[in-house]
Image (cartoon, rainbow over all chains, first blue to last red; front, side, top):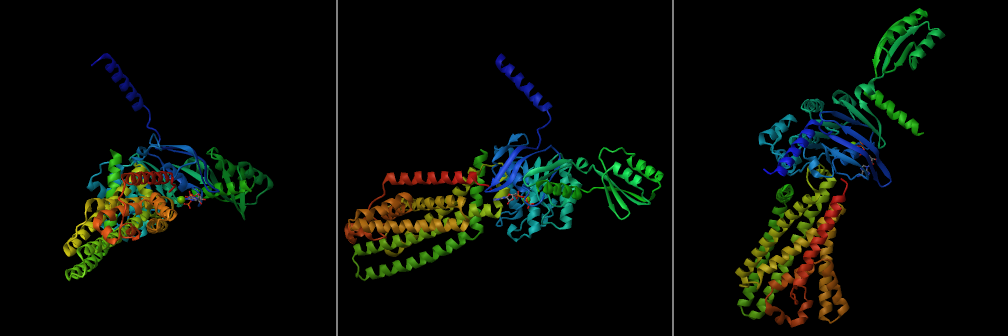
Length: 328
Length: 286
Ligand SMILES: Nc1ncnc2c1ncn2[C@@H]1O[C@H](COP(=O)(O)OP(=O)(O)OP(=O)(O)O)[C@@H](O)[C@H]1O
Ligand SMILES: [Mg+2]
């Protein structure tokens, strides 16, 4: 080996070590995405990130631009502006999608093929070796094992969506994008999807999940991004978004001084003798006992104290309503 | 490497679609009907000439005209078949959503388009060759006529099919599946009629009318290729029999042979339209 070759080999090694030492690039990274359809601004300056092994929920009302964002990530729709990286590669390069599985919102597969043939087609197009047994396993995972040889044209809507899930999962993905994966599924199928997503997460596969079923999102997602009219209205981990706690109190004999004490704790809502007090996320753990002690000292009769947790649904509605009011 | 695999996979898929959707079956039945009918017609011609009511020259002329007529039927079937297959295959798939899952795979859209195109060419081409060859054999069996250049004629028919399906593919990237088929077949018919009008003009010595045919043949090369194919099917003496250049007004005989330049133009035309189709398909939002 000549000296020059030797040196370059050492250089390559060093570079490889450097790269190996770095954390893997995020599964999805996009910045400043914009898309306009005619006069309709569908997406306006959306940036988001999905880390490896992370499950991110994409929430928002109808027409918020969720599907448009997903399609831009996958190169199905051309953004007017913005950048996308998938698994560390620019999305303009089709190879970036080699390890990406996708279940479209509008799931339709070649009706003249059988379920097994659809999987064979997708495996071939993905360019990844997946054995026939693994493909069959994938079909049984979504509950279609006994329909593998049947034509897709004869499938019910829910069965087609299950097949779509199998297609998204079949080629050993490192990122799975699911656009309303349970829209056509029965309650059992929804549980199946939840288990599948959790299994993917445990294997370190990143998932971007768009759903209107907030309970579903709340159960499986690490983080949520809320889109509203093409913009990111809020985003964060569930703990960050739901960090706000509430306490409900049933009180009698309230003096003005006691009301002041309540208002000092947080925003108060009153319904009859029930008072709901919002507590700030960073409130001391002793806030509630302190409040009760002070109220009792002020002569208030305390009938009940109940902790309450804001659900993601309430939080989402709050954010969307705030956005609407801010507009007017 | 991966692109080649994509192209071949999609081409095979397109062929399988034609097979599974019973397009092949429908075409086979149609072809059989046409073959039987023409066989019957040709055997009648043979019976007449056997009774020496027709001279052998007349019989050849009749055979040439009839062969061209039946071949026109085949090219029409091929045109309709491929145009209505090419339309749904692209715009139908984008409309229904089938394309979403496929194009989200690590593949180039141009490779998908090329695969579709190749599949359609394979399908339309083999139909034309098989049906055309069967027809030639029927003619030989019944009236003992064999075209002077059967291979060239069939190749030109295949070329005509390719021209039309490329056009249908371009249209299907831009308009709805049904519209693309209708427009492609409509244009095909219009150039054929323009060709006939032009030939009438030429036989009358009217240059401006003749130009109609020439121009339409440049814009959409189906009719020019079709005339070249007819020329290769028909007996050289048939034209003389029909009355020389007067014969060029007759839609099922061709006077002028095809020039190399024209064939090259047809190839360039196909490449150009394919390029446009690719550009349009690449830009499309699904
Ligand atoms: N192909 C298209 N042509 C024209 N407008 C479109 C197209 N696709 C989306 N839009 C518009 O873009 C906006 C966002 O649509 P998108 O499908 O992304 O919403 P979404 O958040 O997925 O809604 P949903 O919850 O109903 O699925 C809508 O106003 C819609 O009308
Ligand atoms: Mg949507």
